[in-house]
Image 1 (tube, one colour):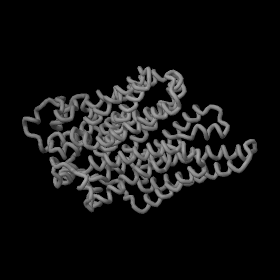
Image 2 (cartoon, one colour):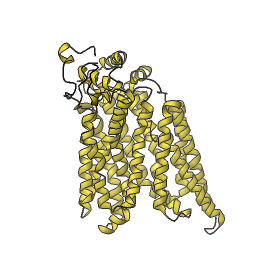
Image 3 (cartoon, rainbow, N blue to C red):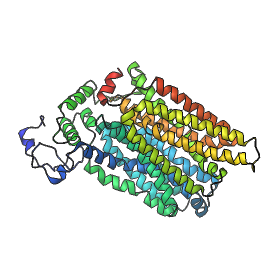
Image 4 (cartoon, one colour):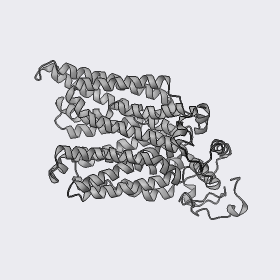
Length: 486
């Protein structure tokens, strides 16, 4: 690289980075690279390897969310819990996630993306171990809070890290791996919950983070974070290995340097700074999409899914729920393939429109069921129709509203406010998720058709929001996105 002097040219290529903990030291383009270094010459392989390692965090995220469903009966029986006590156990992960979200941006800014993932992994492991040995609610609740705290940090840090390391033509697809991993984690919890008791399942929950911690030592820190912190040599080395040792990174290096030059890395960002007009639009888009993601009622719909399956005459609600998890994984995988081909905005629009139509079907089915006899053929048909609507909504959510708000949040927030603004956006998402989860049983007891109508209206509002306000970021570097928003 052009910034290396002769002494650095001769350093051992395997010397670790001081600031990133990575096992390689990119000092030259010598043809006599070590075999392990040659394995990551190709840009896509190098970036993909990094994404696959940090994707263990969202798998942990999903596993935490899916854990309570297959274990409810066993935990309630073994620890003599009431329904309200188990409901509190389930909701505490959201409370912990809100606390983690508040801290996530600042942690990621001060100690880096990899350091914050390391911090997130430790309470997750401790939390699962607390649950696995719980004899009463104290350890059960403490474990759930610790898990939630780690998940709150993960939910912000992983999409930001992926966005900052990915080349512009792959950023959307690689960013969607975040949500894909969440759905895989949920499905794994459902699947393993069919065979393992709740204590063993909790121990299995430690595995993603136990693998993540050593994996973090084999990947580079975000080059954009290193540049912001003034670590010029490590920034260029990190970017070089991500793009390939034979790739000319001069243009990208200069773009990143220009982007961070105007902001002082030592200056703390305050809430009052977010009132500046230049930050209003990216803040509105980033926070707005993450709030609308949860206002769509996806958690309320999934909460009621097993009852819908039962009302449709499906005997095994656990198997049906597992099937729904598998559909989520497949649909999110399709989104991963589409997002860099069709663009973010069109997928958001199609996704929210599909969810709106699906929720109209579900609401109409429930309104109709309230006026017909339970033993009639029309009642049974409406039950089947409600299942079709729920599946359609889950597919629609997975195609766009699931992964893309996190991608856009990580792309659109300016680098100098990303820590604070990202924390606010992530906190908003978790707060609305908690609110929807807590109010869903009350709303459904009031009126199932009315509840799904409210969710449908939120999805319709998202169609308008995405179509009119959300900018297209496909194919642009993060620096180009920031310049276009000024």
